[in-house]
Image (cartoon, rainbow, N blue to C red; front, side):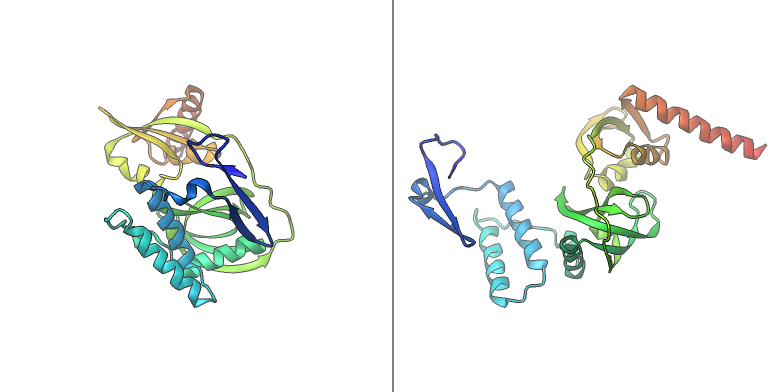
Length: 258
């Protein structure tokens, strides 16, 4: 019992769900093929590629997925190119997906995109999602007892661990929007943090970047590690907080030198 965008309530699609089977009764406008935009086609191909990366026991399903990818990729007589370097190795996707379903801890080796350092983390994966062409894992960091976002292509090792004996409550903290001025020589900061960036505009000083985060402490540490290449334009209370912390850090360095 659902309608199609752009149609009146009188042009509904009557569907019946029974034993996992979806039956369409009197499909009406469904006999006219829908035209997908290029963006929609890219999203479809990405979804199919993720499915193809998952280990399937039935070869016939994998063959059908591959055929569908080929058909969708050429719908508009132009090949839709997906950068396969962004597709993570199937062993990581399989392990992560299994851990999500089983509520299992993963021990991962991770290269921080901001610090360029390798570390080991115990995490509980919550979701996998694509953003701006990269695959991300939203997970609960066991040590920090907070949610963190990891770029999957920065994971160097992934091993399944113990099953959870406690309930992970996904935090739904409101996102805080911050406007930053990033100098041109720090463009890599923008490229590495596309998952939190909402908009980018060019200015005389570099780039005006709007970011949305729920973990404001992480953003503060990231900005402090890139001073003076990043300035906070808004909100002002956050700018004052970071400025004061930067002064305190400098004071500690000066006292240690003396």
